[in-house]
Image (cartoon, rainbow, N blue to C red):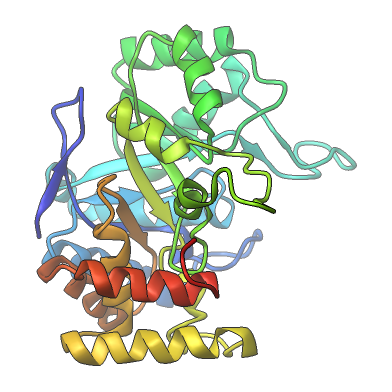
Length: 323
């Protein structure tokens, strides 16, 4: 698989990444199962076979169990670590944790960031993360505390590089003013049906244009050489039959299937190829726990959509021609 170099690092990552959220689907205190252990080992193997080297985690995924499952594999096969770029995220805290009645919240305090990383390292059975992302913007976050946490983690050798997730251009710029490390990744929801960050570039100054809360985010990331990662790039299976079809997506699904037949690849591959065709250099994160679906999605690395087919799909997703 072709790779992207991450600017201002010594990392080179596969154009498609593997998302580990669903290694366990039980977001509770139930014990890990042998089925989950088997699936985790199989999917790590399948991802590596496809040339994928970036594995995306978060401290909250299945309340930590997805990291634990992954770490068990690394514990049995420690040599795999050298073939991987490990990334995790922190900053989201659950309701009723640690005390009953507390709300769900975000937490960019120094102690929470450092503590979350140390917990993730224990779960993953590794000494360091290649990349740490702040999961969602914390309205009460103080950039000075984030900067101190980043410095402490980097100085201790626990995190090599840093980035964010779900941050706008202005939020990135504010944080970068305070942290000494370059912010090298922004992970955002992007897919053919969830195309708002792309669509905003063509609807500016048009009558009735909606308010764009994250205006200019993709352009800012390109300008600052920040790798854009796309979460949910397959739109949760809404266009490929993994979940029930919604009536409003019939035309888009039909168009997607026509283009997939034309290129002789899967519909999943077309969805990822649509993102890969964008000049921002977007890295889709695929989280399937089915080997065949992951293989089908990775076909996207082997071809490029024409400009006309890209716009054909974009038009269907927008539900209207471009202005």
